[in-house]
Length: 114
Length: 110
Image 1 (cartoon, rainbow over the protein chains, first blue to last red):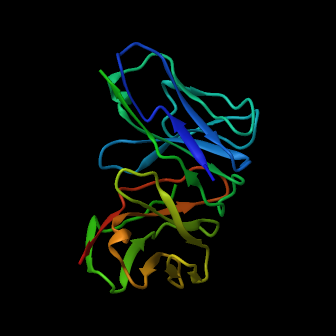
Image 2 (cartoon, helix red, strand yellow):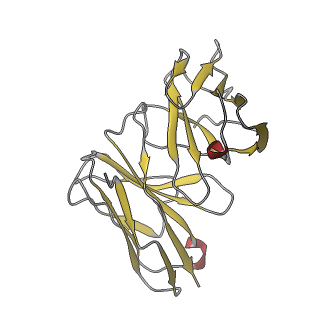
């Protein structure tokens, strides 16, 4: 089973350009999440979605936007990239948003903003 | 949000048990204790979680102190494939955030 797929695997982006990171899950999970992980640090939540049609802000939402038009897809958009957004981005999903549900993670997208 | 404290790194020998400690002195009654691990260049992977009672699964055991202010992840027989960063995370029902610390880097020596 594919689980969670992310695209692209890596990207170098010029500052000021926009970009959408793609995330698709095939587990029919209701909840999805976007995290960023800076070098040597733990993950930080950017945005989340409890179910299709709803989204919420995480710990570090500024400079990012998300949409959840259907259950499977949860794209993350950087409208105007800045160097501080250089990071590894992980998409995750869980059956529901409750505190006892395990999250499944994708392989990540490594983004470098120059 | 309640935070956790873990050692930066630990070493263990292959095929020996490993006990990874986590302190969470400000834990609230509704916080679940989650453990995830991250192998090099991969996304995190769920290991185990618990609320009050000790828990076992195919990957590990979770021992929770009676006052819930600390917990220990136990790998019963570590292999080289268990070398990873292990994160201890508290998660409550009032939000959907997993608050990640820097974790413990587990080094397995052959």
